Length: 166
Image 1 (cartoon, rainbow, N blue to C red):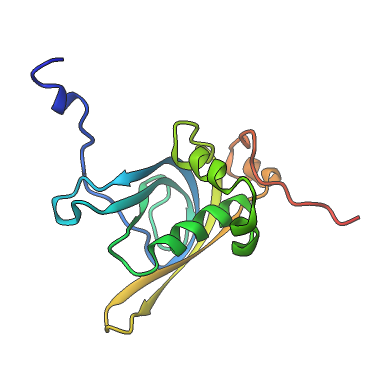
Image 2 (cartoon, helix red, strand yellow):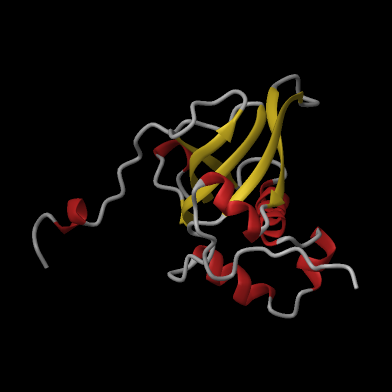
């Protein structure tokens, strides 16, 4: 073990651009879940999803932004559940009752990173909290594999595909 391994293994905090109000299409670049490295949220769990902005009516296309949630915020678990269910094309109830729920979450946030290179549509709007603060509420919808070509992308294995009515 080297004397400077703590630097070799460090993740820079950097500056994150948060999701602004508007209609967006994001390309997932990385999902992270675990203990927060931020000194202000030490001993808290965090979930970070890093995106490239593919389409947006309010944010710069081609730049990066992040969904950042910590368990210090009300709604943390529901917000993360909503994102995972939304990008995979599940309703919240379907996601909750999926017998492979743990496997899915491990595949999303673990080393498999199954959402990498998937597109997701996001509608974000500013709302007032009961405490008087502002919050950007987000809803998530999967992007059908057939639509990736519109953004000059190839749908990855496992991309959402709408079921055709019989």
